[in-house]
Image (cartoon, rainbow, N blue to C red; front, side, top):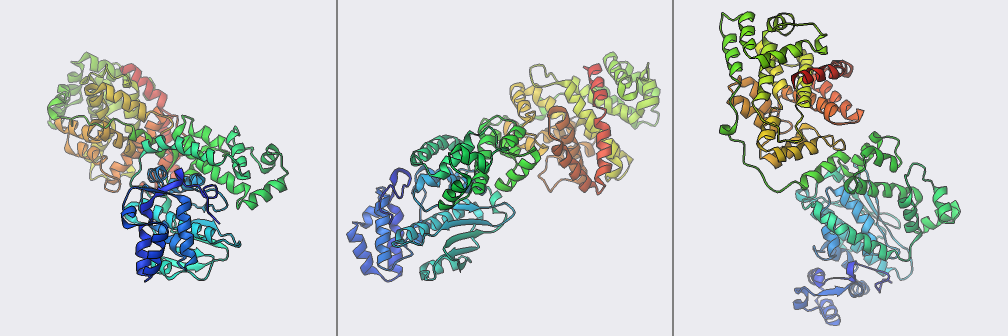
Length: 640
């Protein structure tokens, strides 16, 4: 019988007495007012007490539930668990509600359940993000097992309610609940069937089955600060409850001390504990678990700790947890928690950003467009335009002339020994590409970025030029109305990250912090993730700022429309805007991040699906440009 706090140890060994309010209603609904009066007189449960903030010892609660059991009210434990309110279990409730996803919450529920309960009743959770979630509570077929039965029913109710409440708008219920006995009280049957839950009978087992794919549901109350604050307290309480360690706890301690899990085995753990393999297996089986189960659950729980609490590289975390490579670990992690390690780390970073927004970029604060660009545009619109006239205009600007000739004579163009702008235009660039280079080079001249420590103009140009060449290489696979639209789109590729110059000149300190985030090799972030950060720091998404700048400069509308389209939510962008964003991501990963091959491979797969082209063809186009990185880098060194 569960009758003392050694057998049943809820947090602080007390719960608010208000959790018993539901019993009053249950007994009324059952027409058992005489039992209600007897019960409430026996335990002094007045209406006034039930409405107070008084706390009651857990053994007293279990004594009340056992009294109900003896009087034929066997659903008392389940209904009490279903009616539990936040604050009932103190900080444990708030910790669970603050996890990122349901998957994390359920891992925490299993890990910290010993804080709430000691003895033989325990929850075992089997789940995968792609399969139904199964929660097992072993039923002990013993004499005088009424207390165990009531407690397991209470746990069922608590788990159902915790998942339902924390699942947010979805209010997720199990699809099936199994009981190990046939005489299920009508109240429980009515309660569950009203919510569309099937009830089945399974020998010696309580079981909850949830729909597949629910683990990635985000919790509505998630709060990283709460997690960081409460976890040490819960760890201390957990160790305290395990002072008389079970063999499971001792095995977990061995796993925790292992330098990595790749070489951890049953034989090694049993040797560490001074047991034979058969003895360890038997003892674990007596505690309702197994070595493989402990190892799998430990990996899940420890992986989240390492990702969120340490600065270890994800590749090193994978090795420590016994995976042969990062890809295998990321696949397992996403299955457990519905998100990749990088996405979890991004969530942590954004949650720590200062809770302020800068003023939205004002048009009046933007620099004027390069004058020479406007003159070139006017010349190109004239029927009398010639390469000689445009070359003469450019050569009136010695600095610009030097940079363009430097580009023409770079390794990218094979060291052609170009001596004039006219020669460069005739033999290499053509009029359109000359216009593009003039605008991009002169754009950089419009901004003073010297105060922004993270701004590297050579890398900025390398990223812009690589994206430009990548889009030019894929242009025939994209959809354009005419040649002019195609030319405008390639120019958009060259200019799309001009917002970096805007922010670096106007908000250098914030931009320095931004660069630290997006260049973090452990958080290889897509343009969508970056835009979340931009919105938080600058009050506007970067591509929106670039579009605003180009509109201010009277650049043709199809160019700034394309870039503005890149800032739209996923699913509402044009095919061309998605392609530009993916190509930009690819080269940013290559240039700024030491990313894994699978990060780049994922982008190439998305591009091949988007453009309906074989993966190998897309790979050849992009990798051809990637192979020219050093040549483009030489262009940049000549310019800056």
